[in-house]
Image (cartoon, rainbow, N blue to C red; front, top):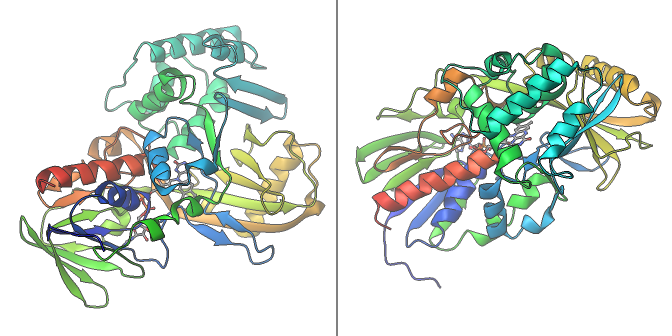
Length: 434
Ligand SMILES: Cc1cc2nc3c(=O)[nH]c(=O)nc-3n(C[C@H](O)[C@H](O)[C@H](O)COP(=O)(O)OP(=O)(O)OC[C@H]3O[C@@H](n4cnc5c(N)ncnc54)[C@H](O)[C@@H]3O)c2cc1C
């Protein structure tokens, strides 16, 4: 039986990546920790979904990772599941349009790779290529954005044409920020480029998982709990009230109430709005959500040469091949405000039209199952305004905040969630002198 000398009690509200990350930071501290998760499983937005027809478990939409996800990878190391990831050798993406395929990479030829990639882009004028190279060079030299600049403003400053924006920058912005270039925070866009292309040759490479994403987190359910650390599923928190700096009362929806010395909220701004508190919380009202539409198609025959593509001039933006259990494809459409309003049959029809246009081997008659996931609140819209409003991980002594949307300097991703959990726990450790 483990010994505990300290009688401090901490509550973590939410069992997504940020909650799990905060909990793992506190695991070797002499304290009692209770985690409250509203759903009947951990993982939050990284959920697994069972397809009834095929019996396959699929991710709640395809998630991309890059080599720079050091905090998320650190978490997976602690959970013993890092070994299920596989890494590209260097950033390497195939783009496909009606006029053909082209490759953008960041490694095979060292720093020259981007230059070679740009030079090989079909249908782009020399002037456009020159401006793009100038832009990439300035990013390398530490280019920064003003707080009000959008990603589109920055591209405009370098006279990057709509054509090359649509082909190259827009898919990257949509995939990483789930926000259109016109709305996306310029600061975060530049941070992403610096990390992806100039931090090291390895930071921008894409990383994939051999397992469903939620399975990477499941060991937490056995590693974490003991007689001082508990995980409560299906316990939705209704209110948190402060008695003093060292004393908080948490009320669960079923009416039960418990006392804690500190609380870490790890919820989205949209879920936080619903929790009543008697203390000031950050401004949640300005945060808007941005939907992601994911479509999984099961096919009798393989129609993709490569494992994934960025799709240019199509309704869907990316396609990934998945071969575990059965052959299927995941198509994604980010910043999907309008797309998310369509019916399932309309979305499937648009996907078929995209695939018929881009892949000669695609045959809609060989598709035997389709699973559509519309996540209306997939992530926050990361505009220059919301970027400046992202709150820090400490509200006041005893009250901490984590979540992908909090202030991390990163887009609202799994890496941001993992980092925010570390920061929230770090602040708590200092304040409680643990
Ligand atoms: C379709 C889709 C695609 C994505 N693609 C990518 C990608 O390619 N790359 C990437 O890095 N990220 C991607 N993301 C984002 C990534 O999933 C999130 O950044 C990450 O999972 C957020 O973790 P979190 O802990 O901050 O929040 P969440 O996962 O939302 O966790 C919050 C938890 O709090 C619980 N909760 C809510 N209210 C209460 C309450 N009252 N009481 C108790 N518990 C409560 C929720 O049930 C949830 O489990 C994608 C997300 C979606 C939806």
